[in-house]
Amino acid sequence: MIEKRKVVLVGTGFVGMSFAYALLNERGIDELVLIDVNHDKAEGEAMDLSHAVPYANGSMKVYAGDYSDCSDASIVVVTAGAAQKPGQTRLDLTAINTKIMMGICESIKESGFKGILLVASNPCDVMTYVASRVTGFDKNRVLGSGTLLDTARLKFMLGELLNVSSENIQAYVMGEHGDSSLVPWTHAYVGAKKVLDILSEKGEDASKLDKIYEDVRDAAYEIINRKKATYYGIGMSLCKLVSSILNNENAVLPVSAYQDNEYGHEGVYTGVPAVVNNEGVREIVKLQLTAEEQAKFDKSTNELKKVIEEIVDPILKEANH
Ligand code: NAD
Image 1: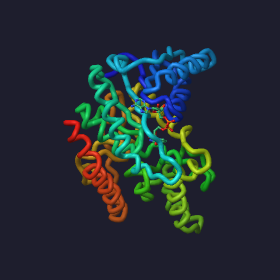
Image 2: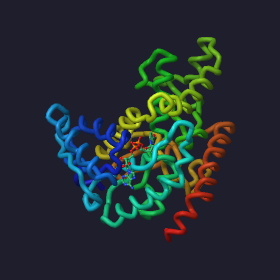
Image 3: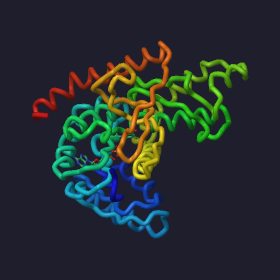
């Protein structure tokens, strides 16, 4: 349970600082602590961000710190690690970021941290697994941003296609935050009406949805090719998730959550809709997937398991985790 509103951010790069900037407008957060292997960068960012406080909605104290600051934090958000370069997939980052995540999580655990651990570093689902294994925290206390950003992209694109507010779209990207993700279109709604029904009433071809899926899946590549990194979308996604956790909202959000057979898989983290509150993931929302949707989910989850087995577990084993 969260008693104090203190947020620690590990990794003050593009993603971390976009999140931090968005968080400034959240009310009721007492402290934001910035940690980075490059402490000067964390200090500079803390100074710069502090100068935005007088005109922000929130009034938090922002400072550069170290892992001892996690001991009484409500939530630690990890955005540290190597980012995709043009042509790289998220899974290409596995070996390097497993080692980085391992070190960070050892320090977080050592601090006596008792709050919620949120991972955004890529490959996100795999890094959340690493965080869970290294800390040994209860599975509900460790979660990843998973397909939260992909879902924001989906809502935006569907809103444009159907000319409705993206806020009124209920739809999820599920599975890996990466190339094997899927959209269960039978569970996509505008208000209370199925997107599939809206399209068929308009006489529109459902292939438009295939194109939207591809654009969502490939969005990061398109952005990285043009500006080398993506960060505003994930920054706002993380802010939304952190405020839902701190405010004990019981919000339904797609996150990377520990699988305990809700969708036929165990021992792995992947993107599913879940009820999120100040204990982390309260429960996973079980959608009735069609056979085709389930097959895509299985393929995606099996790819994550393969990466874990072949790359991650040997690294963890060598480090005695
Ligand atoms: P970046 O290079 O701008 O920032 C990374 C930061 O991590 C740097 O400041 C670096 O000094 C720090 N760092 C590296 N090793 C560290 C360590 N051991 N301890 C503490 N800090 C350390 O990269 P970015 O663009 O901010 O991306 C960060 C991560 O977020 C990448 O893995 C990227 O792929 C991922 N990402 C995730 C999503 C998502 O939806 N989950 C979206 C975009 C990017």
